[in-house]
Every structure is written in C-alpha cells, then in structure tokens.
Length: 275
Image (cartoon, rainbow, N blue to C red; front, side, top):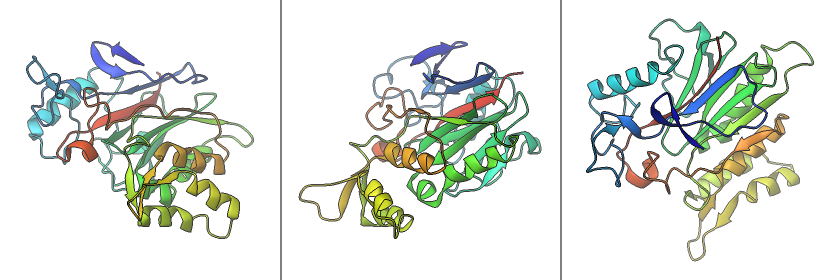
C-alpha cells in the first residue's frame, strides 16, 4: 500500500509476519528533482516537483541523482549501501562496506542495526528478506538472468550463514516488477530456466508453468517473474512469501519501467534492522 513515509510518496509493503524491529520501504518515481524522462510520470508533467530517480547510470544529471539520494538519506537511519548491480549472483554485507563503496553485487544482507540494504530496479524484481526474529535482513535484485543464475538462493544461503543452527525461518516480500501480462521473452529465457531443472520432470513442469506461449508468435512467451521467484524460494525452503502484485510497466504514474520507456530512472527497495 502507498503511504506518506515521513513526507515522501513511498510504498510501505503490506508484509504480514514481518518482524516489528525491521524497517522496509520502496521509493516511487515521485518526490525528487529529476526532470522528464526521469520525472514524476505522464500524469504529473505539468505539476510542480520532479522525479526521485536514484540511478547514477541512466543519463540523469548527477547533481539531480545526488539530491534525490540525499532526500532518501534524510528519511532513513543511515546512508543506504548502494550496489553496482550487474545481473549476477554476488552477495555482500551491507554493514561491512567501507564508507562510500559501491561493490559489484546484486544482493546484500545486514545483521547490524541501522545498516540499510538497497536494491534499484525499473522492471527487475526486488526481493526483501528477513528472518522471523529480525536478526538478519537482505535485499536482492532479480532480473531473469539473476533468477536463473540463483541470486535468491545465494541471498538466502548468506543469511542462513549468519543465523544460529536450527533457527531463523526466513520470509520474503516480492516488490514492484514487470508483471506477467507484460514480460515478453524469447526462447533463450525459457531455456535458461529449463537448464537449471534438467533431468527433473517435476521441476521442468514447474518452470514451464511460468511461461505462456504467445499465440501466433513462435518462440515468444509471457513470463511470470513472480512465479519464477516463488519457485526459486521454495527450492531453498522459503515458503512464506508476500507481495508480487505490483506491475512497474502498467503503473506509469508510480514506477519507472525500462521495458515501457527505455530511457528512465530507478526506484529503490530498502530494508534494515531498526536501531
């Protein structure tokens, strides 16, 4: 659901069962200083204000991005641990990075209160994690390459390595991403997921269930990135998964979308343990 988070138009996820001692938010495209095409969207062009683009690599004026990040920082307990995302599977510790570092990784975890895991997206799937006791949190950037490569599984493994034996049931929330009616992919995407299920008929059937063939378009499918993420999480025992109902492509007034606009900004999904 959308709330005013300390004055900003951000989303506070509806995440049943999330520990009381963690904080989590998703920014929207609203509430910053960036002009179009990084602005507040087609319904807001004539209004005051600008877009809250947080991506440094998308062509926006660096001064605008710095100002937008300062807005975000001002409403959080510390500076988010920004990453250089590369559609891989590397996981870093947000609470062990040197000040100002931007490691090349697609997920981060934290066990220290106040350290903020941050993921930027504009169609790829952001996934937030916590153990039920609120002792470790994480965030992962899951485009189809990362999903097929195992970024969610790697994040869960890194979190479990921080937990005492036989403790720490992990839960997850799936953030705004390209929806199943918008995510057209080719044969190579289906093949990448089938490769990870090779030799297991049940797993192959599970993968194929997330791909709907497009009528009259051989080799084209509509992929359900949410279903693929839930499948990956089930395989590592994470079954309490919320979210998965927000489409970045369809909601131009709230979300940046690369598939829809090509040149666009980035929103962020953030999670931390409260101090």
